[in-house]
Image 1 (cartoon, helix red, strand yellow):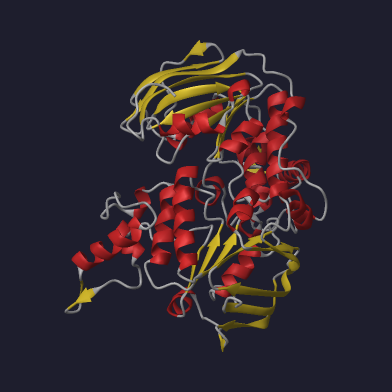
Image 2: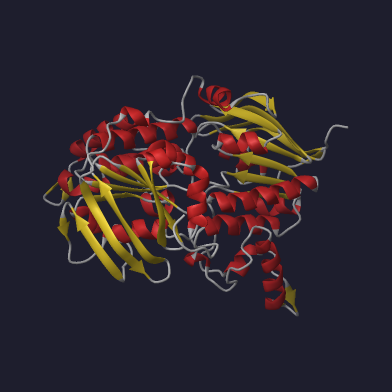
Length: 507
């Protein structure tokens, strides 16, 4: 017997300045994971938002188990059993973890919030996604990106859910946390729920999906059953041409080995206990580890965004008296940063593409305290062309760009400024296959030009494809270092688990 169709979309269309969706039809069946793939800007997020009432379509209709369905927002969609976890999380930072999980459905007693019931229900929901040990009274603002992602997942599953929509759910998760998510998806699938899984990670799609729908330029170009298409075929459908996801690492010369940056005994509270490594000129060094291993904290400390408690830093052969105490100081010493969270920390969302691209060298584009518009526009145009930033114009607000193009802007602002060390925290998070390959190529070009590049990534495969060496952090200290010849995924994962699992010694 065919599975019941829990949610059907028929001929959906949506136009902004250009069509975002055109004649898109889709069926979500009970007991099925239906993957949605496509380049950034293909229409995946627009479709997901329409399905839960966050965006109103210009044309088409939706049916929920055969009945008309046109939710006015997430709350109404949730009442109809349709939940979503968006890539760009919308959490209330002033709330506690427990309050956020049950936001909109706090249990009450005699007209007051029942705090005991709130904690019990939140604890149960968090346990389903592997966050059972988290402090329920901890403010949301104190959580890292990965923890926020799992918190949003717990909130979606805290209420009865028949249709779950996931937009890039593993982009902020380590492989260990992603496995917890996959187990929960299997449980929901076994209970007869329908799951729409939008992701750029094709290995996950081919592993999890019963069907795959490919969007390109707002249109459905193909739907394939499990096993009908290889990753290469899916990429070709997505971009309309052959596009590899792995850059030609071996085309770049072996790094000279001349150290540009040396770190010894970096310490900061419990999150950084003993981090030591060196980064050579022309080298791409990977930083691997699980969520909470200290990867992002290491990058922030090197950039002066967080104060450190101890350790030594040497830059270009000269030992500095202390670590940087501000990003401004780090930039002045030739260190640049592509942040983990581009929306909150990397971009000025209301401002134009032009303003965001030229932000790192604004003082050079000024005369007598005022920006020279012609010089700024010329600089932005050159960078946008070099990076292949797709935008309606340089005056378009950067918030309107796709995730991949936003990430190119964050990277691009540093390309017009002299620096020695580039710190990249999850540089390809939430970008499509083609944009990912382009970003990798830009990082390879920078290394070939003699820059030292440090890359943090939750994907071991990305680090293996891109890096010359990989340093593995475990619970705030270095567990192991691997050279190219020793890039073994299992060994890297064992090292990452070392201190989290209570082990001793380097893996």
